[in-house]
Amino acid sequence: MQPIEKMLQRLPVVLFQLQIFDNGQLAFPYITESAFALLGYNAPEIVSNSSLIISKIHKQDAFGLKRIFVSSAQTLSIVDFDLRYNHTEKGIIWINITAKPERDESGTIWYGSLKNVTKEKEMKSTVVENEKKYRATIENSLNGFIIGKDGAVIDANEAAIKMFGYDSLDDMKQKQRADFFDDKSEEYLKIKRERTINGKARGEVHGIKKNGDYFPCIMFSNFFIDANGSSNTINSFIDISEEIEANEKLIKIQQLLTQAELLAEIGSSELDYKTGKFLWSDGFYKIHGLQPNGQEITNEISEQFLHPDDRHKIKLMEEAFIEKKDHLEFDSKIIRTDGKIRDISSYWKFTYDKEGNPLKMYGVVQDITEKKEQEKELKLLNHELVLKAQKLISYNNELERFAYVASHDLQEPLRNISGSLQLLKIKYQEQLDERAIEFINNSIDSSKRMKQLIIDLLEFSRVDSAHLEIKKVQLSDVINEVLTTLSPIIKQEQATIEVGQLPVVYGIRTQIVQLFQNLIGNALKYKSNKREPLVKIAVTEQETEWKITVRDNGLGIDARYYDKIFVIFQRLHKKTEYNGTGIGLAICKKIIETHGGSIGVTSEVGVGSCFYFTLPKK
Ligand code: ADP
View 1 (cartoon, rainbow, N blue to C red):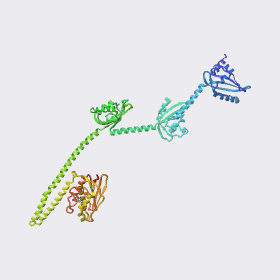
View 2 (view 1 turned 120 degrees about the vertical axis):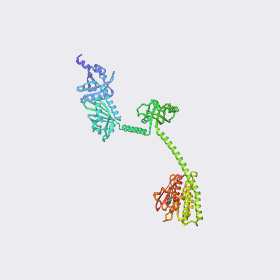
View 3 (view 1 turned 30 degrees about the vertical axis):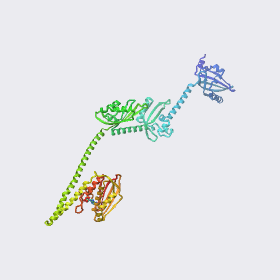
View 4 (view 1 turned 135 degrees about the vertical axis):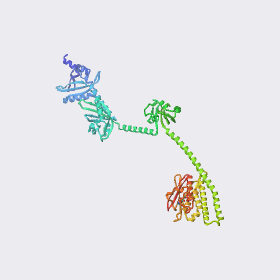
């Protein structure tokens, strides 16, 4: 074999001569021996019967191939076509046919080559498929992708356009890398340094939106230099502003919770029965005298804090589980790590799985040592107060008894004194001179006055509700009774008494009669000499009581004496001006206080006074 023939046989391509006659007939006048390796037939077979290989051309490619050859024959253009060939043994393979036409007298003749391009075809379709896949992945990704070349944006997905606040990809393409993040920042330079070493890197940077706002994001950066020497970057971004915000919120809430726990001296915990892990909050650690998160806690460790006197309470927990209780509450003592004994109140909540096995136990404990101590002071204080009140009551009773006995017993000798003075005056009038008679008269006046004082004092000492029953009292009846009693003086002074709508109150009737009698009596007694007395009695309803006012147009009282006039024996006038002992208002005050109310006065000198007091509705 000639070397040229050997070469042609071993060529990785098949060289051929193809002739198509004007009548449409087709023949391979020549084909290299390498045809066998490619087409499955040796050269002489093909030369003698071209249809052997023509019939093996894939149906979908045969039509196209024919058209190309027809056109090539007409225009003498070069044929370059990829077709599928059904190889008897290898199955479908891709063959590229390249041929140059020439005209001759019987038709057209092509000189060309056939080449197996199956591998290239497969590679190409893999590349196309991969490209489709990656594009879909990037397009569907929630991460923002920006693909850059030599610092300029050449592509970006929807997520990136949105994340950086742009309207479209074209909008983004106008920008440079530095418009999307500070490419001089230390955080980016760090990523860049790592990327130079590994070809890829990740880190946290601050993205810049179109409107200039910054947002925190995680950046994944890939870098490579392509065949043309251009630098290519594929950067993807995850916006973490929401996570950071949520995280900050969580930290704040946790801090608040810790703060609240510490303030309330509360601690919370969670025991996981599967892992045996016992989680304690900072407050829980503190209550036990431990540094927060200082020590890993187990159920056993937790139980060791219980005071020996309260160890039996562990049983309560076990029983609660057996009985599938939902929760348990108890107080106990614990011994802290510093040896101090503290009172703890605890609340435990249990959860179970479907089979009824314990899952978790949540606990809230509170240090109630101070509270318990306070309760103990308070109890002591209360006891002392009760004792003092009892003492006060008995002193008061004694005092009242004394006032009663004294005033009662004083009446007898006083009667004797005034009787003797009267007798002295009558029997020895003739013997006594004028001055002596005057002394006797003065003494008789004084003893009369003393008698009145004693009577009033006796009355004052009798104001006591202990043995009197509280009943419904119709105030209008009370006023009618008082006005009847006072009618002579009302007539005498030509006084007008105006009475509004009066309610039913709860109290001791005789005392309320006396109260109104004293107040109306005073209104008439301390009248103005410039006008006839006018007394107005009015009532206003309050939530639990009635407020009653007795208003007059009399002398009035200087504000300095508002309190003084309610004190026993305190008077603003001389006995020569106005009769009286200074007990009337003290009695009124005692009556009102006995009824659980209050009494006071407002007044204007020369205009009149308004006495007000409250009586219970029920
Ligand atoms: P008495 O009338 O016996 O002096 P009271 O206790 O009733 O005793 O009154 C104390 C003092 O309050 C009276 O002396 C009088 O100066 C003054 N007072 C009481 N009621 C009135 C009133 N309606 N107008 C002006 N002064 C009054």
